[in-house]
Image (cartoon, rainbow, N blue to C red; front, side, top):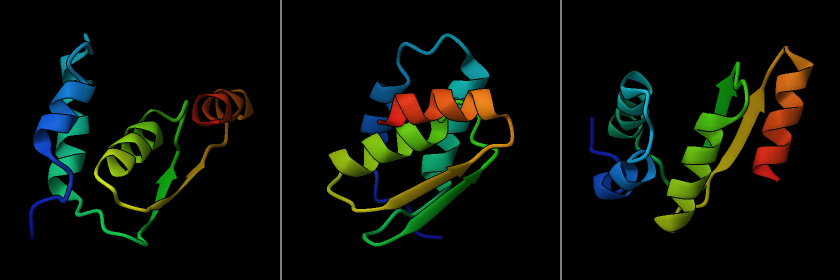
Length: 87
């Protein structure tokens, strides 16, 4: 597996104020394992409030990578929160 095209320093900066250490590590692991490239399509099943799509979108934009991100969520109130956060 090739290393991610997202700079690890950027990911560290994105989560530097996150109090939940387990969440911080999960975000970092996502970017270590996934190799985002132009034209990729990302599906987040059970996106909740949209935290991961927001991180992915920001990191991709900062790295000059064009990805299409889609989130699906069964809990309609959470979906509305995600839509507002990603608008």
